[in-house]
Image 1 (cartoon, rainbow, N blue to C red):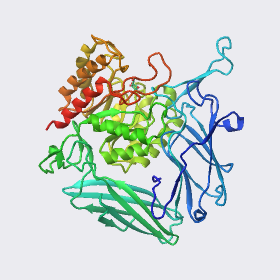
Image 2 (tube, rainbow, N blue to C red):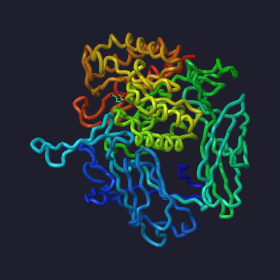
Image 3 (cartoon, rainbow, N blue to C red):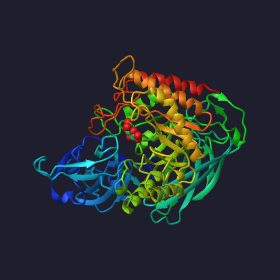
Length: 592
Ligand code: GCB
């Protein structure tokens, strides 16, 4: 499934705007859904979104596709009262070709039912508990148990589009790149859809100025870009850093021509026992030209300093917001971050585009968060998780910014059932994409853990002096070092600390420092940094402070209107800690 793009053969209608909206109480609409929890927007019924759309008469000759960039969580779609689509899962796109349901000569009524109820086999999973004690609870009272720490926003989170292709069309493109000397190696595979009678394929690689630098004529071919411009993460090379090419594909058949332009970058990702390498032959490092050398041992190690984020802001909640994307990327650049982690679900494609274009490397994480019970290791859960990995890799496989796939965050791994489950999900993901390291983010371990042995790179979350020894920043350095060395004794692979942080209410100050104050956050983070600096040149290849910005969570006595571990407030204003991190990231980038 390709991202919808305009071309000389393709048209898009974006159905953004104010849709009609109502809660549906009718039993027929509730078929297949469980009632959702009291902390969610959906509460006890589907949310129904309605809109009307007209399409041009020329579309009669075209293949017309209705695409949702994401809706959370269970979705049913009707076009002119005909059910056309069901999808389970948020954060990833789904689509359907419209045939008899579409009216070319008049109005089309689109009805979308969305329900965010989570069950043991959804990803993330959840469980409904009905409270039957009528002395204590009103009739029908229930709670949805979820063990993840962000608000379970329901609804249509991203764009809805109608787009056209010719009846014979380019269905999928896979691009894998390598680097040999000054040559970029581009392997591509094109899948066609439709009758594809008498199809011919023409492929051009266009550079950033639109000049063709390589051509291909088959569905599956290797091309060479001489004197290639590599894709580098921000800070690792002189400008242009995140160089993007375009693969222009022209498919011709008896039914006509289809043209699609797929952006991509040329780069490699490798993991050694102590390093994470981006590109085999660094030309420039941190803005300093370097000797060109093909010996892998001389490769520039990439230090992944950055932030896990959330798709979250005031007023907007989780929905796609271009102004917010621009603001967040300005702040990431201001900080000097080189990477983000899409905690704890794949982010909008528009965000991923900015990562590709601005050189922000990404650990893309699946919605596998809250897998904290053996009840979530059943066959239905596993097969849904595998399907989600299919959707996620299919969506983001051509993005140079994506350097690691994370299949889950902080799952239960201390029970034997975890071994089969995570071995299956990780192997499946490696089969889908053998070119990138695969991991999950660990909260416990390395003792008594059944799953970490399957990962390519260790990602660990740590909260010393917060959830343990709260207030005692003097334990941090000791505990970080002890913990990391223990991980290294068990696994001979590099480590990224993918979370460390302290809740901080902006504007709250106290001396000496006290938890929740800005002083405490700065002191706390500084202690972690001192420990990291002792391991950075050895096996620690990344540090990611939790979190980029404050974000909304379910109501809980440990949360003061949401999680406050942000460097920025939910309105994107800096706390004292943001200045600390800016200084640190700048000094790391200026190291030679
Ligand atoms: C974690 C989770 C993250 C939470 C964070 C916290 O380990 O991965 O989702 O928000 O801790 O602040 O407790």
